Length: 373
Image 1 (cartoon, rainbow, N blue to C red):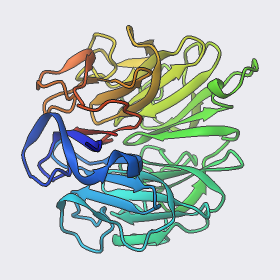
Image 2 (image 1 turned 180 degrees about the vertical axis):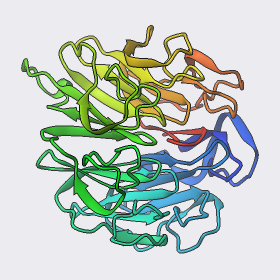
Image 3 (image 1 turned 180 degrees about the horizontal axis):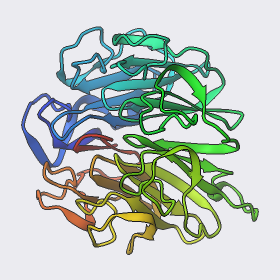
């Protein structure tokens, strides 16, 4: 029997892709039509507990989408939601994907970026503020190696180690020193040597220096952060919004191998001991430290080692461990922890994916569902 992409949590917009509009799923359900073998990457977006959309990049470099579509974020030329995957139109050479609140991004084989969906703040980057239900080209960007999508803004990492941002900027999430939104990409100020990026709802993280797991040198990597900081999600020991990048505090012993961002919380894995650090909003225990106390500097998440991947949701977090099992923690009102309950957990619980050999996870940035493949 072929392995299939799995989803769990809130499904009121069809975001689990299982062909139903069933309210919630507390354990994994099967996304229709997609075998695990053909799925290369997955992404999950959303802008509230009951909404969201999913994306899957396939081996043939096309992209499938499902869920909420009121702003055209599924890229199928319509604004009608659907509860099973369908193909994004006019897109046949994608190499990566990202899902924002109500918009979507694809990195193309020629290292340019396409975008579709909501564009009220210019988050599609095509020089307009008009929504598009089909992919449009992001203006003036080339040599891109990674993309990330926030609630209403977008990020791109270029191969020269610079980061470019566009879209909503009220909290400084574009990192250009202003609060003016932009509908074309602009460079993030004083940020070079970046190897990884992550976008939260209205804040961002960048890993400066090589991810330490790729080198045995003594070079250190640092986490930079900018944008909204109302709940301490920048980790700079304040709750002041930052319009240009600042250092997330904490002793990054031996460097950092992974970064991830939820809506209003942030995550990093230290390489020397493979320990998880978390900071920011903790309303539902999404930091995983056994409390619901907000943290304005990174704190350790006890009891987790061998972390391979991280994903942050609206108020929950998902981690893939080295034994290919999934752990989740935080808000569980829609079953997004996937452990068969709707009880929140401030410490990691085992997600019942019904999958062996999981190697991809995603959590809806502004929504309450999760994906695994």
